Image (cartoon, rainbow, N blue to C red; front, side, top):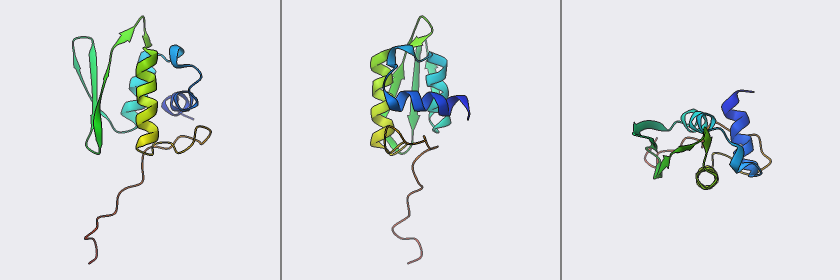
Length: 102
């Protein structure tokens, strides 16, 4: 199991928000298909099919607990993981185009 998948599992379980390494959280978001841009100490993540913009800043090499919670909420809201005990997946299933094949 890859490091981003293991870290995503920790995030989904929600029991170690204060102990997630900042670089591991960045790796999870990149693994889930988010684009990253950096402006100073701010790491800003976007994805075309996600309305929210995720703005992260490190604190002593760790992710801030409230930012881990924000990422967890987005993971569940957009179906990146369905249940806390499920094996994390790479992302939501592709959306079918309403006009496809008609």
